[in-house]
Each structure stands twice: as C-alpha cells, then as structure tokens.
Image (cartoon, rainbow, N blue to C red; front, side, top):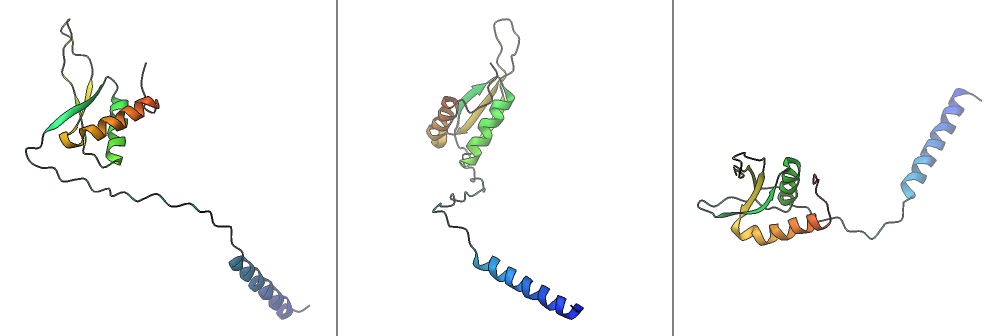
Length: 123
C-alpha cells in the first residue's frame, strides 16, 4: 500500500466515523430544566420594617439559613446579638431578619429546613 492509498482509507474511515457519531443519539428523557431564578436582589424600600424570624448560637447555621433564604429571593440580614444572661456574660448569638411582608414565607422555609434537619446544627 502506498502512502496515498493509506491516507485515503484513513480519511474514509474518519468520515464514516464522524457520520456515524452525528447520526447516533441518546434517547431523550422527558425532563424539564428547572426555572432559572433571577439573582438580582430586590430594591429595599426606605423605612421598611424588618422582623427577626430566627435565632441561633451557631454562625454556620445562620449563614446556611441566610444562603437558603437568598436563594428564594428573600432579602435577609444576619446580625450578632448582644443579649446578656443572668451572670452578665454575653453568649454568642445570631439573629436573622427579613422584611415584614416576606416573614411568613421565610418562616415556612426555615421550618421546612429544620424539619428535614437540613441545617448544620451543633448539639
């Protein structure tokens, strides 16, 4: 076989392989893609009332709840609490606040996460 013949056979095999690959398809699953969420944060209204919906001693749990609520497009703020106990010592604590009109939905989501034990709680 000459080089030209070998090259021609290789090109024909390559063409056939590419043709076969383009015609061969996997069966399509009947699955819909999840809806794409907007990652734009809502504009905050001046003078808006915020309410505390959750309290924890764990910074990780507070960050987890904050992340979950932000995924649902709920404006959320985590703050470190300054409560003193009877001995005058301030224990670590974190509060989560959301706008008042979003608080019922936020409380439902938090309850669902705690019910599923989906948060990184420290016992």
